[in-house]
Image (cartoon, rainbow over all chains, first blue to last red; front, side, top):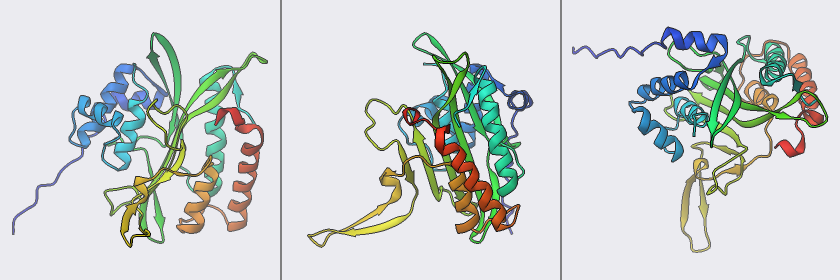
Length: 75
Length: 206
């Protein structure tokens, strides 16, 4: 019987977790968090931002999350 | 009640405190959390508050509900901003967007999502308060053509959806376990919704 590869979800970096705990996120941290969430969907940051603007992100809670976060990026 | 505060964090903290008091009597002891972010838009610096459940180790911000249809994730998110009130020295809290989402664990898609966007793009003409989801239905037209649709293809207007009504839906219709007896959660939701309904959400703010 073949063993299936077990995909381990990456953990949120400690400094981002601290930022959420402290209740303040810089633009740099926001971009880093969007990149982190995008990676969970196998997307690069730029692609995730483009798809957020085009409303073509995956229809799941992570996709929704990215869409909200992208709306908070500098313009 | 309209929420005022000395600044955005102050006003948004009041909102979060009231929502958490309600959640603690109804659906979950997991508290909503607040994050402040600054965005520069066309050279102007704007401040926003993002309210959601705490981030898990993998970045999610949802709670699990044990519904009669199996486990589902519930996500409650609001983006808020502070508006200077000319008649006061304090700022008034205003919702920029909300998204309330339910996703069964066994699904790749959300079951249902209630959304509001205060400032949609210039080329967006859909209803700003709407509900969507992959719920399927058919329309038979007058040429006997069947149109197969899902609710994701429409922005079905809802008007403003209070968090209280989403909690009520989870408890009553989905059968999520309540933290108090029915009379207790019903009274808590009714009182909270009534308090918010009157001056909490000014018409010009939605």
